[in-house]
Image (cartoon, rainbow, N blue to C red; front, side):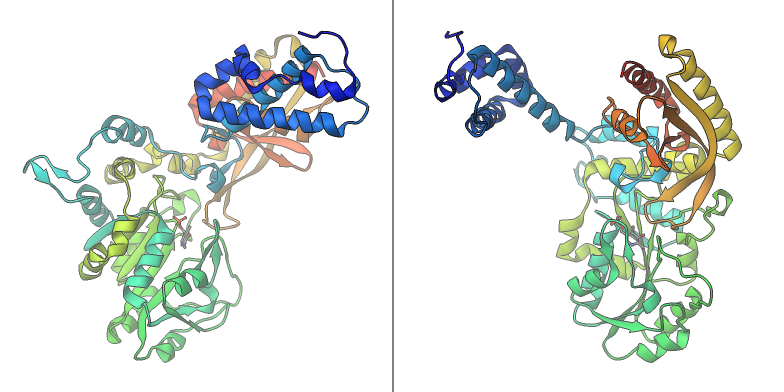
Length: 480
Ligand SMILES: *Cc1c(COP(=O)(O)O)cnc(C)c1O
């Protein structure tokens, strides 16, 4: 190997070959995880990039082959770290946003996790009848349970609530009219736009009323030969307050019956139980909508319900049967993993144990006093582990608010106690980034130039990892 400095033109000749780089022990270790093809691709692109950099950087007079190899290998390692970090990874959600769409919405209950990993991950009875020893009915258990919990005649499960809405509108209103109040033509987090879904389903939108007031008469006047559905959409993350009016669902149900059209309520968040006790008085309770006469109600599995991503539809048997028979159902049905998680989640509701067992419900139910006690204990434990990095980070407990998120009320939040972190030597933006790059990543709130942690959304079994992340942060702050 030529170890002497070489002039710029021949420096390029010192670039190691792809094979040489591949033999490097660091690259060999990456290859074990990444596999042959991906590794070669990263090596090729990195060598090409370094070659380009050398060509462009005029005046690079010298290059040692060994230095170039190290430079390439360290870029390869960084690239692979970056690629790996983009896998679906567990994070600690310290934001206080309970249903955080970017962080996977509802965390599953222990029973749901167990059902997925123990019962559903391998071969399972998703469509097999053990008694009869032959093909069985898909989703039977969950559908029955949904009927019992909501009082509906029938139920069906699809991929998410957007799919549920699309399927209902498409099956029952293609080429016909759907009547909806102007106050409900909303966009709900995650790009769900009611008018767009309507258009795509082939239905024609008939807007009635005004943004703030729609009367029963407005709906009645809009009903004609072509009308298939009266659609009510829970505005979820949007509220109009002040001079407002909307007809009662009972009255809409009567109007729909008289005119032989379907009353469909897209309920969104899906409260199976009255959540007024935990500050969510505005959420429509599914059983109440059914009792009031809605023909179909759809809601999400992974919002307030606290289960896996799914779109749950309950309502009249003849309508649900028509949905099941439609080819769209085949394209929108859910997997065995979803059924298993949903069954375990709904079981908790059947046992009246949702507030204790479903993480979303438990987090929303936590009182400010309980969160304050928890925050104080937590801060003590963190400080006791700072060791020689005492006083590098300043931890304070502040009053603040948690957010329900995920399309529940926009301003619906709960009083909480936040842990505010500051440091003399590190900006809050740097601290937020360091926590985010922790393993597991710790997602905090950056607000008014402060890093804030809300323990409401942190599982107690994650506290150790969170403490370790903060100790690491103190060490970084202390040595910078
Ligand atoms: C969230 C929401 C949806 C979309 O539900 P996904 O399960 O995310 O598809 C539809 N309608 C309403 C009213 C919602 O709140």
